[in-house]
Length: 218
Image (cartoon, rainbow, N blue to C red):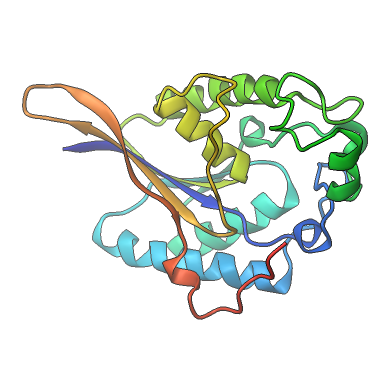
């Protein structure tokens, strides 16, 4: 028996993604036309499920690309949209709005390369972000026990969910891919003996995007 279901939809392509820029809170300008189309396709796919077993609500973090993705999903499913700062992405500090290539060159790698070192002045460390985001996501899961919830999420939130629910040690070198507008689903199961566990039903599912123009490879 599935008691709680968490569906993570990574936001559609944002302009900062297309431009190769760090999309922090100061400089995120929202989705591209392709990003809107991607989010709409994800919403339509969830709408098919919604007819059979309804979702309860959509959550979105504060950055514009998440707000826009969440709005598309909530409007399509006709369910409430809640904004929650606990779903915000990493703090980028002085890297906000700068080219990722330049930031990674200056830091001798991306955030994951040196997980206990900030990638720019004023930024998070990768492990520090994961610890904070895991605590925040754990709170949201507890608050939504027994519900079917959609998260308009950063890719980092998907990684956080896997880190938390698979009990992966903070600092593990393993990683996960996460395409724009992909769907990742976690289900909390209870068997006839009352035993429970979280199960990953799908990760980075992009079947609904097959008819759209693919994004260029970085």
